Image (cartoon, helix red, strand yellow):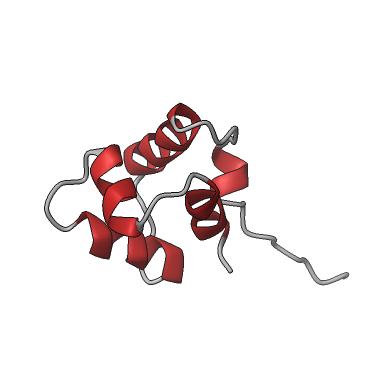
Length: 77
């Protein structure tokens, strides 16, 4: 399960309610669903909005908690 989904559930919010709390408008449920499923990546501004909204709802987190950086592995030369 994706980190955004776990944190949203911790905040006791549906995708629709959470998207509305973020101010994403009419298609907020689909937008959050796409982010959770990894079908779309949020812009930096949207990612900041998601993190700020989770914190406002009492879920203490930062950008890396919600959107973990990709792990890049390098082959040994």
